[in-house]
Image (cartoon, rainbow over all chains, first blue to last red; front, side):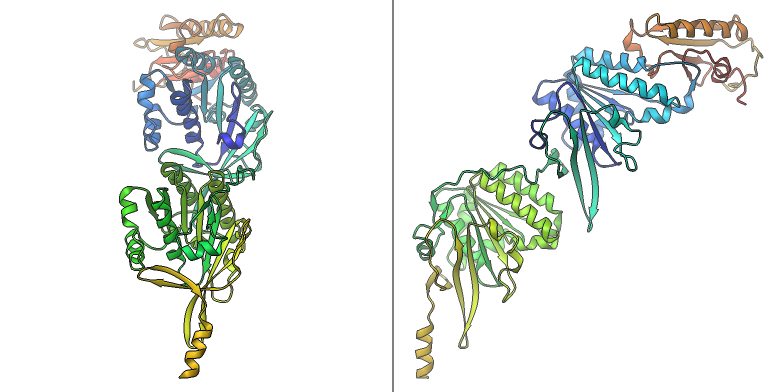
Length: 464
Length: 105
């Protein structure tokens, strides 16, 4: 969140958070307060016009916020302001000093630096004199500014306008729009900064998620292209393949793509790389979207790659999830979080083509771009596998191929009644590499790469 | 309080009107509200009312108890149910309606 606003919400100024029902306004506001109270030692006041303290505490408890504890520590005050039109009769001039005094009292009693008003528009339905109300709200925001507290004001989204009652006219410093959209049965929450005076900010829509740890925002393009390019090399795990790549293997921190049709050995090559990395004492994270952990370990054992000791040691971690389990953004966030937790040197995504089941081409490309950027920025060597249809080797990966540093293509070659696995390097940036198509065999003793045995076969056939 | 809607000027002898006026300092609006209230009570509820004035500048902690937002606010504590009238009480008709001293037209 701080990344896209260029440093966080405006300090000492009000921010308006607008959105339709259920898009996470209250939560956003609460996160702002709880964060302030726990991480920045800035106590907060939450003025709720909709839910009472008990309900609020319950609602956010599932996200790991312990409001009661914070209240006890005098870091948080929840003030439930109940207004009911049926109880109120208006007779003559009035102002909202009562609200000011209440708020002021709450702020002073804990020395609050942050204030949330959720949702102040309730007042519009409770009080009929809009003229007074507007003037008073304007005074309120001014007053909050003068007090120097950072405020978050939530508002309902209106038709054609940002908020139903035009609050954005008063709170003009920073306006954030939240949106909740369902696209092909996958719901995505998005966030956009409409306006932010005096700072650079991202103008894109950013997907965000409400997870068990609160709100998580994902900037799509916040990572610049200024990551370092390490010159170190890492072995592919197969001696012959290392030789094909200028004798040293992949660049550390580069992105590698293994593409090929079914059964050409993509996962096996990935496993060989992971095995080699773990043996060097590096940490690996393997995202599998098709096979279970057990299945991968068993299958790899059959070609002489034993991954289970690495798993036991903790240097190799598998994450298995069907791509259709949740939306693309959720995958992205899961990947982000696991990487932050595990701190791997090598990440494998096997295969990336499965993402096309849950998103359009453009969306998948955007997500993969972000993953690649993120991994590069952290100098993690990334290996992706990609399933391609027979005869159209580039189709499914064409979108990301330009982001890839080393691209190895695996193919089935049918040659005189026999099928061979062939391997060649489509490209490999920054290193001399072999242009040959090599044969590639999965044996009990591991992966063997050799010359294509065309001549030999011919001789055999001739003699028969 | 079954008889929550006494007719205008009916003056039921057993009832006491407990009124609470919230103000914030001695503002013109507050002073006007108090004067207007006094007048209305004398006219309609002579001898049956009790007015308590609470200055929120002095006792801000009392604002949340009666859910006070607007100033001035008149709260009718008794007879139940609780009613609130906001404003300087210059609109006598509405005050009477609010206090249930007059049937709503």
